[in-house]
Image 1 (cartoon, rainbow, N blue to C red):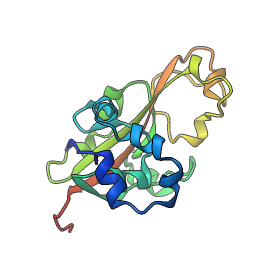
Image 2: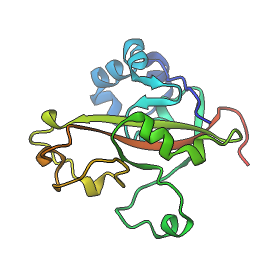
Image 3: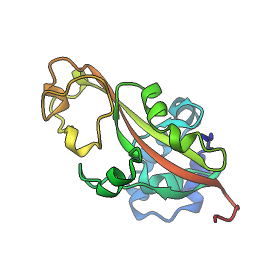
Length: 174
């Protein structure tokens, strides 16, 4: 099932982390972990802006620990293809499509997940190197016609996603 998480506030993050890069980026981290930014990050229950949060998820999240994070390694996913399992990461046309795609996982009441998403609009991508093949499988219904998202003639927006299995802090994992 999807679960909501609590992000650290800036003061706690500042006091508890020992990240040498953080000192040079104090303004960035303070804005990122402000109460306003945290509230805006939630899309719906268990879905948050912040695609592929990776190690940041481990240091930003106050309420849960990451149990498992699927790492996408290009378009070849032989073990997933053989098992017919949906990818934990990829690109969709909208959030509902992501939830439908991941239902095998998020529908399990004995496991808890968080999905990080990134909303990308083609008109805002000029000069960026957003390539389809580096984003995971496309599960959408539109036809991809270009290597770079910005060059797509018809697709206007997409949602990248990355799912994490989490457990409440302090609970043992099996």
